Image 1 (tube, rainbow over the protein chains, first blue to last red):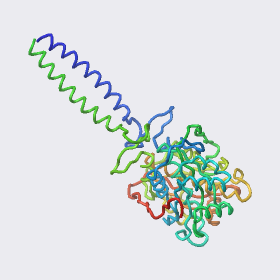
Image 2: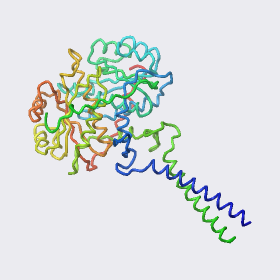
Image 3: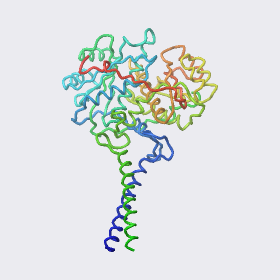
Image 4: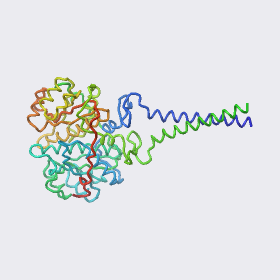
Length: 222
Length: 222
């Protein structure tokens, strides 16, 4: 009996040590010594303060090589939702999104857009459009371009954040490209395709670039 | 001796139970049943799949009310870095950023920009500019607007992610506003201020809007 009890003590102690180590590891992953609380708490990566959003911003790259894995409608909805979370001038939200997964349509777009050949291999695309029916009037109408560009960046970042790769290929203001995309997708006159964002699972070939250049940042005045 | 050993067994068992519960809690916070690994792993929030980047995208709001707390140069550099991580047409990076924290300059900008009155209370601003010396030539030159708009969205998201509040106030293509900002900041002719992004610590008055509208998302064609 005494030996059994001793043996049990030793076993229980060993279990405590293992659990303690696991708990230590687990809580240190969650710790937040210097930065924010919550999902975007700061961590140190390569000696630089960062958080998951900044990581996504700095890891985003133009991805032109994809695996054959399909992109789901749920994912495309999420990307469009992210686009619609962008700010717009006077909150006009002058946008529309066309989600494309049809192989034939993607191939046709690749054929008419010289800089969008990667659509031949992409599982999906989102076409970000300006809706002039919703845009401001007069000289401020053109602000839809800024609004839809901000929305496009949200789509790219959301894609990066869920493990997809994407690349923005330009359409507007090239009249020929605008006409070609309109024809293929049946887009009416008052809707202007700004770009075609090709989307797929990255093969991993593309790496992010460090584009920081301190000479582009001026302090207090030019 | 036998009683001591038994008592120790009971104590050790109790410690194991407590550690086990803590470890269970801790690992469930880190679990990733469906989504990605790493900092942007999916979690369920309000029944919706999300991750920290998506949380930032959906939580970003136009913040026009700020506390008096100062925004540091380190933070402004981080925001400009985020801006410079955006994609640009043909990788031209046709941008420049002017960071402003001088109270007098912020006040002067507030006086000339009717929709930027909040600069009177903002601790800082970043002016995102197009640099026509770096932009594409001919009809593609105007793509700097799209590039700098994507960069601006990165600045807004980076601000949200580090606990700052920001709002994009328009400058280009309003000739009067462009001229006024140029004059105050000493910006040369070939540099075009696109916007002034007011930045500060939010008072918490502004809440994000849910701008999702399924009718704005078309499937396969218009």
